[in-house]
Length: 287
Ligand code: NAP
Image (cartoon, rainbow, N blue to C red; front, side):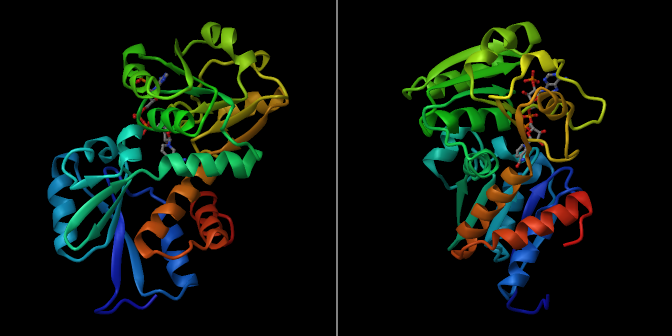
């Protein structure tokens, strides 16, 4: 990488931000395509998001990814939001063109690509159980409905948080059900779903447990955990022990990043390079 006066800058805003693997993924892509671009991580507190985005735009940055705590906050204060990002309830990618901020959601796209790649599963006509109704759960549940899922069930610890998701899905043809996130409630519906998605933050810590036993899972189920660090959460361990097909969130991270890359650069993302860089940054594998 050779930074000079004409290097194009993109990056990610978050708080905290030091653990992000996105710089490794994007800078590997720029290197592979011999582009004079650089991707940097910026610690930006929630209260400073708007100022930082405007400042970045004035400084000539052309794109910013948003992570915790900015994805939902960014729905206000951006000039134009893509209709899908508004429906998914979050913005994770901003492009700056001619001083105008445009917000996108590439997490939903990343999820759909991930389950296609990991399970060869198309969401159309499928029945999906989403655990969690935070930013990730909202985006995944609504994206499944927009992509033609037959049924979406959302289970969350806090039931009230499911309401905006229910409102959004009520405008689609997808059947919807809200549930309390508890083993006895999950047991009543899990036999009818094709795909279970963990979109809670339970599993980020090694000792975390959703309390779902192996008896709930079977070989016909696909279980996707949006968590990628650790590589195997308790949910994936338990589901795999019951014969279910399992995958972790690295593929979603990769494909949301690839889509952001394509929005900013208008070039095809070098997926293999980006995947290797991610695996090196997150799991310490040799790139
Ligand atoms: P968030 O908005 O803070 O939502 C957190 C979710 O976890 C809520 O549904 C929350 O339930 C639930 N939760 C937290 N602690 C819980 C507990 N002890 N028991 C039961 N439920 C609990 O976070 P987010 O942005 O949606 O992120 C959620 C997960 O998605 C994170 O693990 C993140 O790493 C992952 N993610 C992955 C990707 C990827 O590219 N792979 C992208 C985005 C997010 P309540 O509503 O009841 O609090």
